[in-house]
Image 1: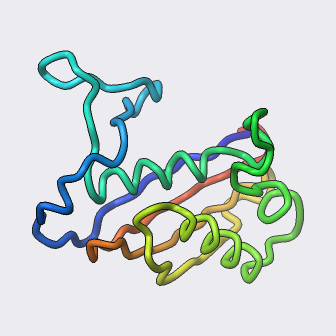
Image 2: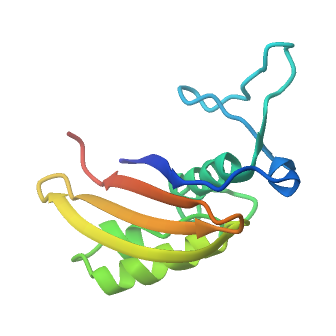
Length: 147
């Protein structure tokens, strides 16, 4: 059981001084540890890259997974994997989770498709616009069973 997350930044306006403000720490794509810069310091993310990182964290955390706050996380079982796919429910849940991410101002499209019924695999694609006008397209693939 797991969720993969990939995202592309489709368009991003030229950086402004507001776009260079620290927003998050950069995580290594392989093991999710802090990534270090050339000087050995923790690498920082600014602007749209930080928003993509936050979206990834939000959608890869299952609702109830974080023991200190069981309300954190995306409801993969209740909204997506645990029942027949209801695209309207998926759209509502994805929009709510993405809009709760600092820097996301709108969710412009959401689609969901069952890609493998045997392992209950679902692919969700959504497009969001950020507070600096960047457009992000994210693809989430979640599955309940083993491959």
